[in-house]
Length: 307
Ligand SMILES: NC(=O)c1ccc[n+]([C@@H]2O[C@H](COP(=O)([O-])OP(=O)(O)OC[C@H]3O[C@@H](n4cnc5c(N)ncnc54)[C@H](OP(=O)(O)O)[C@@H]3O)[C@@H](O)[C@H]2O)c1
Image 1 (spheres, protein in one colour):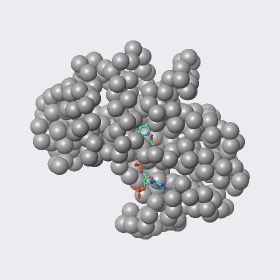
Image 2 (image 1 turned 180 degrees about the horizontal axis):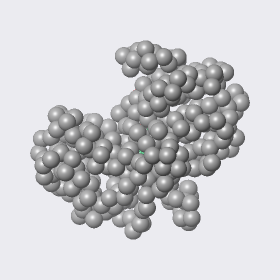
Image 3 (image 1 turned 30 degrees about the vertical axis):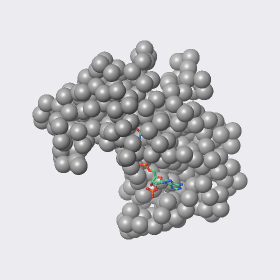
Image 4 (image 1 turned 45 degrees about the vertical axis):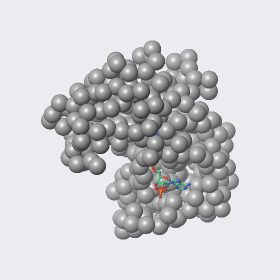
């Protein structure tokens, strides 16, 4: 493949760093990567050293996005949990249409599975952010740019961010997740990236237009037990109210993310839905998905030292 693959979010960020992981996976296969970064810094410097072509710009700037698509046929789109998703998706989709892209792999969010009557239904979005993803997916479909949507539930990385400090300081996870019986579907950002990179690297069209990607369906109690096993010590789950949680995290996450996550926790707490793991990772990559416990074992040291 001689034309570069355009990878947005390529410097990585505070969520799953999926763009960074996609760029790494493609570069390892010696596939040319045009890395779209928000700004030039140490992260973009590393990417350049790895062999990526760097373009710096704002996904909300049509001129920057159009310039980045020159001589590109395939692209990975990801946008942080912050305001502007719909504008960025529309700019990216319109620019991809004008540039004649054949494949856009879009990092979306979980919206149920095929066969579920609520699958992709706008009325069933658990948060405004999730509704924006449902609309962004449609914008990409309407643009006819060969869009494929990866729809994952909360990432393992998100749980790590939520619990690291309290586990390190108090051997406890303080979360507004109810009495411990709620089920929280999860997936690893590494698997999201592996699926995306595989679809981008393979010749021809992906087999599906939507890949719901659920790797695990643990209850809150099971999440905390797995965390304890991975850390080699007992971790307590301490249920707190939505208000206590919002108060504790409001300095660390932006208002858009706070709104999204608050609604998501309320949704999972009340949900009667029975989630099932999907086979997307195995079907696309030929490998089993990473388990939650494997992820926590791999990250135990950084969690233990979190401040
Ligand atoms: N976290 C979860 O649990 C989860 C679960 C399912 C789906 N998702 C979806 O995954 C997406 C986030 O994916 P991710 O893990 O790749 O995000 P991430 O780790 O937060 O990375 C976001 C990247 O986008 C860049 N960026 C931010 N604003 C930009 C702008 N205006 N123009 C250009 N680049 C910009 C950031 O650069 P700077 O750092 O330099 O600003 C960063 O490199 C969201 O759409 C979210 O809804 C997340």
